[in-house]
Length: 218
Image 1 (cartoon, rainbow, N blue to C red):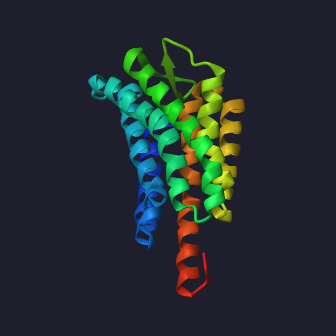
Image 2 (image 1 turned 30 degrees about the vertical axis):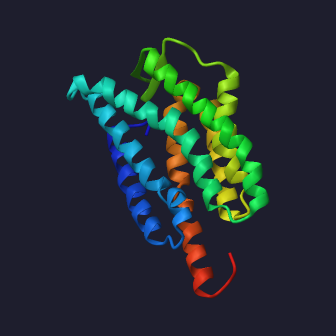
């Protein structure tokens, strides 16, 4: 999270707890990746909490670089690959799954390009105005950002599950707010919004469990 080590570790603990409960609600193996999203966000937030300790408090400065790259691998590579795939696997409607293929390919392409960039160009994290800013020696083209967000936001919006579509709307709104208000620290702030929004995934699986327990087709 972009504000402090304490905030990051608190978000990691809460999101991790949500993730464990969410996984306990899964009854279909194909839904496990989507249910694991909160727990994975917890790992990412814990990494940034450690990064705060190295940058702001000066603890173990030698860990700053690996923690920076660890956070970026999650934020820029993992999510555009994993989110569309997780949503597609959990989608019961075949027509909507086909519609999700295009954003899945765009997200995968963006993630692979960003992986290449992370591996071949220097990246660093600095604290500016009480936010962590991730800087690269090579700026990313606008079209790459478009592919990234189509890949991560469009599949949830296309879902036949209302709660998953709401998740997409919240993540989209968080992206807009992060870009307008915190553009320098966009990566960090947007990931915080996404981590908080992942709490709705627990609500989604709780609803599914109750519906299945009552014999309602889902």
